[in-house]
Length: 89
Image (tube, helix red, strand yellow):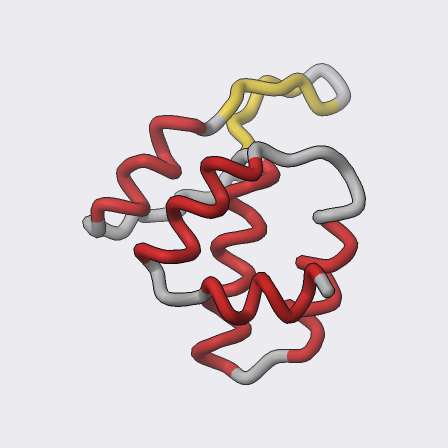
C-alpha cells in the first residue's frame, strides 16, 4: 500500500521535509522524518489536541540523543518551548 502525505506550506514544514532521511525498511526504500521533527510534530499535535499520549511519546523520543540546538530553535519559533521544558523536567 502506498500513501501520499501532502506537505504543509509553513516554513517549519519545509525545513522538516528537507531534513527527512532515506531509509531501508525490510527491503523497501522510503523516507522518514528525523527524530527531532517527530518530537516537534508531536508537541504541536499535543498543543492543539491536548493529547497526553503525544506528550508521553515526546518523553520516550527524548530518551535517545537529539539535536538539542535544532529543537531549541524550533520550539521557540513554534511556541511549544514550555511544553518541551515540562517534558524534560
